[in-house]
Length: 114
Length: 115
Image (cartoon, rainbow over all chains, first blue to last red; front, side, top):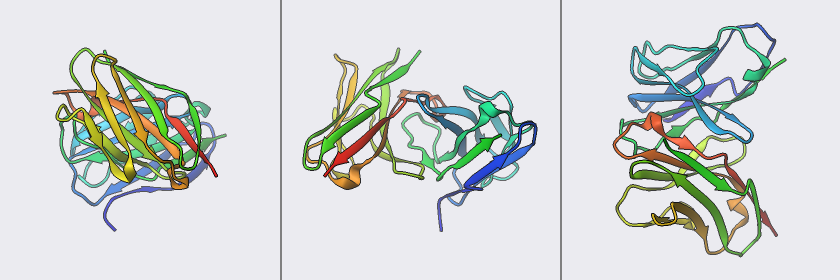
């Protein structure tokens, strides 16, 4: 099916572990984004990518690493997970750069760091 | 600098009643404005967007929003609530002429519908 697929949907990990959240889109959208959603904060941008091999920091990038070797994939890695990174993570894409371009979201990954 | 404020983290209305979800924004340049809806265990979906054409914007599922520059508001309304409208709603602002990475989301309003 076309769209954005995030995996896993749920993940429990321990403090200090490395964990990678996957994001795959079938639209060939150039722009991809990672957000975290926390109660009372709405969505905050972690990293984004304008194209393959082009990534940039968002509002809250510390503790996260991204890569984009292929247009359709945009994995997010927590190099050493902390409890403050317990959150729901959303991947999104857009086919245009403009600020009037709507974002298309995946269904999210709920990450718990113990 | 830009910001968006959603008044009321939780709104409860009866089925068939008017839905009003409030959103005020702050932006140094003309903004684009969005409403997204999030159903349980799902990602956000675009409900409607304002991009400086008509000030009254109609979206999906009978929702509409009116851009009021003098009040810096973009409130979301629906004349008659349905049980299926129960969800979280996010207002978002993005300065015109910038990139999609500059969008700022409000903290969300959870809409409950009473039978």
